[in-house]
Image (tube, rainbow, N blue to C red; front, side, top):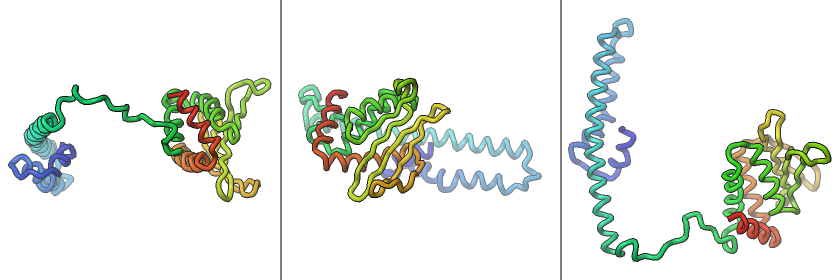
Length: 241
């Protein structure tokens, strides 16, 4: 409750409720715990524990009451602000609709935004199953970046499930291969391999968050340089909107 009060207290307020909340965090609660801790461990019996719990309950109820008072003041201020906005701009029904918050125009959006949204959609459409993400990524990324994406499948004649998807993203002085490999346990293992002048240099096993952020940055730079890649990404983005 004290953590919830921090935002309200940051707005100021010098009334009794605000003062009591500040003092509870600064003095009342620490002093209560300290008084109990100063009892020698051998003497901390059931009576001492009962006194401590009783005092904590008192602080808890007092904090809840003062937090409610502070919240009520904030709600009153919010209602007053709403009345001011309605008076200033008119009723909401009289204003035109706005595009969705997540609206992205593929023709003008920065490449990093398109790449990030594409990866977010892959995760959203596939659910939490990493193998499902791998299967869907193989289809969509290969369609968006056929020049740099390779997909390796298992099974007879390579018609089985996806075992690995790799994106060979060229940079100014080297090439990074971002790969997702299916493990025997059914998980997906992300790796990044650096190639310098066509020679394999080093492979790193990284977390999925680090892998994704690196891919977004390098793939966005590649798309920014390659007009064809930009057009393919925008087309895929529109098709899967």
